[in-house]
Length: 342
Image (cartoon, rainbow, N blue to C red):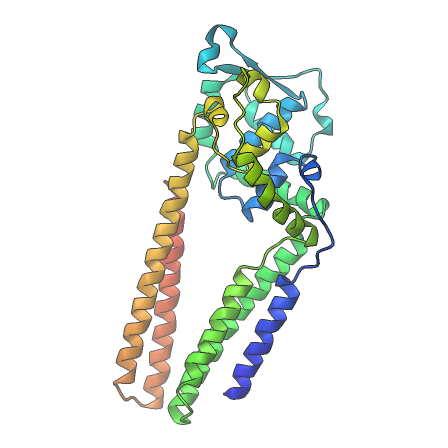
C-alpha cells in the first residue's frame, strides 16, 4: 500500500511539472495588449467562455472600429442612445477571420442593417450559452488562439483523454483495493490517504489550463490592465457614445466584463443577467446531484462497515454500487442538459 501511495505522489509531481509549470519567456505591455483582438483578450481572461455575450459584443465594436460595419446613432434620439448598425458593403469581408465572419452573419443574416432594439431582441433568442451558432464562434476563436500561439488545442485533446482514462482506472483501483482489504487486512489509514491522493490528481487533471507560456504571460498582463480599466470612465469631458465606441480601451473593457456607464448606455445589460441565470441553473443542478452522490456513498460505507457477507455477496455489493453511481452520474448529466434548455 505504501508503494501505491508513493506512486501517487510521483504522479502528482509529474502532472504539476508537465502541465502547471510555465516558463516566463514572454511579457505583455499595455501597448502589446491593445494590439490584440478584444475577443482574444476576453477568452484568455476567462479561461473558458462563460459570458459569451460580452465577447461577441466586443467583436461587434471591433468590426465597427475596422469599418466593416457602421454604428450610426440616431441624432434626433441621441439621449436614448439609439443606433442602427449597417454593413459596409464597400469593405471586402474576405479578409475577416472566421470568428469575425460568424458575428457578421449573425448581424446581417436577413438584411444589411439592424437597430439597437432588433440587436437586443436577437440576442435574447440567439446568444444562448449552448446555441450552435455561438459554439461555432467559440470553436473558430479557439482555432485563432491556437494559430497565434496562446493556447494549445493538441494539449486540450491530450489532457481530456488522459483525464478520462485516469478517472476510470482510479475508480477500478479503489474498488480492487477495497476488495483486497476485506481479505488481507492492512493499516486502515493508508486507504483514505490513497483515495485523497487520487482525488488531488484527478482535480489537477480536470483543471489543466490549455494556455501556452505565451497565453499565461498575457493572462498575467491582463490583471494589471484590467485594474486600470476598472478605474476609467469613458463618458467624460462631454464625450458621447458615438465617439466612445471607437475607443480601444472601451472595446477591451467590454470584452473583459467591466461594468461602466458607457457600456450600460450602449446596450441593455439585462441580456447578460439572463445569461448568468442560465449558468446558475446548470451549476445548482450539478451541485445538487454531486451532494446526493456523496450522501449516498457515505451511507453505503456506514452500512458496509456493519455487515458481513460472503465473497460472492461482496462482488454483487460492489457491482450494484458501481451501477448506482453510474446512474447518479447520468442524472447529473440530464440535470445539466435540462437546465441548458431553459
